[in-house]
Length: 194
Image 1 (spheres, rainbow, N blue to C red):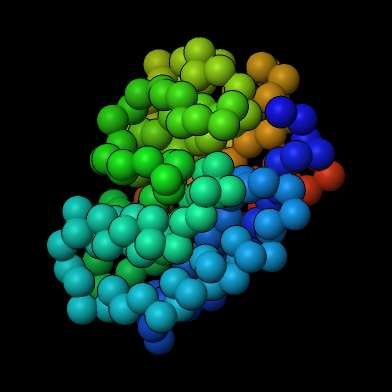
Image 2: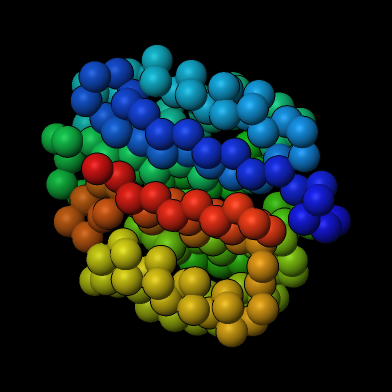
């Protein structure tokens, strides 16, 4: 798979009236607009009354899976819940597969993509082998702000000549900054939740 068949999509908005979010990812080339439209529908998801950390991410992941099409290879969503002070607010992976909580491990997620996810972030998807992500799996990210986590992950990816990637950090919690970075070919998206 080369860059010409990997599309990139991105959108940002508000879930309900109080939860800012950003969503993006990789898809089949030519389907970017449709993917953005599907993810923009997350604006109708109301999580403002939910206070359970696990349930927040689970509901967000389920909403993404409901909107997922077979041509979406990987998606990431970061969001900031204004009334929660613990680490949560990030979902990453292949939405056409069963989701699970971050375990600090690497895995193949299909369509030539692999993923690493650390509780609280960073979560990283690359086009390439899961072994390429092993240096991240050996690192500790505890106590670092989201922006620093993203910087470290990006540096490791550059050292390993990874050219197609997505980096995500949680948007809710004490060290959260809600970072979403996507790079593929000429597309270079760098977003931080407001």
